[in-house]
Amino acid sequence: MLHFDRRLLLNFDWVLIGAVLVVSTMGMVNLYSSTHHYTNVGTSLYFKELAYYLMGAAIVLLVVSIDYRVLLFLNYPLYVAMILLLLFAIAFGSNIPGEQRWIHLDFFRTLLSEPAKLILVITLASYYSCKKTAKGLGLLDLVVPALLTGLLFLLILKLLDLGTAFLLGCIFISMTLFVKLRWTTLATLLCGGLSLILVAWNFLQPYQRNRIEAFLNPVNDPLGAGYQIIQSKVAVGSGLIFGKGFIRGTQGQLDFFSERHTDFAFSVWAEEWGFVGAALLVTCYFFMIFWGLNIANSARDKFGELLAFGVVSLIFWQAVINLAMVMGLLPNMGVLLPLVSYGGTSLLINLAGLGLLMNIRMRRDLGNNQTLFPLGTKR
Image (cartoon, rainbow, N blue to C red; front, side, top):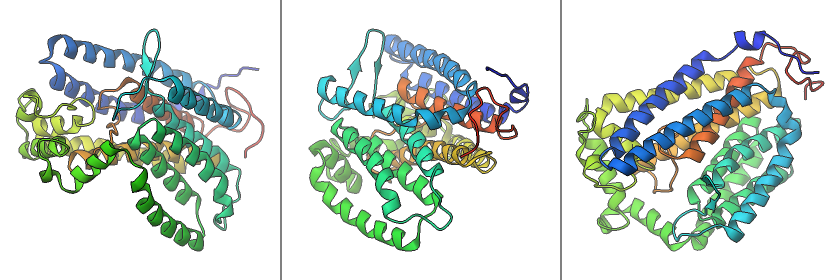
């Protein structure tokens, strides 16, 4: 029987909501600055993103209203559905060289590799929560989660989305290390990982190799593959301490790089608001990460702990990879900055993940049977 506990409202995570609102406001200000001079397109992008935020708010309300332990029973159906959608995208999605595959629907188009990130977090959290990990996991214990991750990884590589595939690997490693590994298992995996990196080069697409070569030495092709990275570094550096001011950045406003509202949104922000503004944005991310780890630490069950840590890993690695990318510390892999870069599907998935964090926080002090949907005993 449906039961509503008033303590859920008392435990609502206003701190996390506040942090999300601050970062989102920065993102919307930055989006307006980076697109306003394209009168029609800029206005369209700005209001589209605003509409996605409203959709995201509805998703957050839906996510927090249902006990997160429902996902223990939905994890594999969600995973199978994700695999089928990716196969459908490979078979029938439109394909532009160097870009991800898209499926075109009547009212919107969705990038199917985005939900795969959150699906993997849910799947790994569900699997590891059922394992005894006190003595550490051995190699045989990792076969199933490695296969689950590997299948998504390969399908997304087939969709030509190197950034998301790399992100899936980061999530798998983070959650597996969090669970605990035997030191012999860790040493074996490190050796195997280094070998795979060398082999993987032969399977990369030409445009992916160009991005990596441009990262290693962008001055070799300053007007081609290295152009975006060079202009991004110029924009970040030219902001100095306090920046050039809102809508006064030269690199972003004069079209020196094309992906300023998506992959290189941070470059525009750093140029216009300087070191102080960039430090403020990074501090907000660190606070969200710290608060998310606190939620994981205080979760009432192992599944909630793993799920919260997985969501934190998802946000953390997206932010780290994007920031490293725009500063030339990593090749351009197309990973967006959470809540700041323009991208409707990415925004909705990140907000859904943050909704799960709020869900776990709201239910940490409730007994097993005092939830919206009682699910029996803890796992």
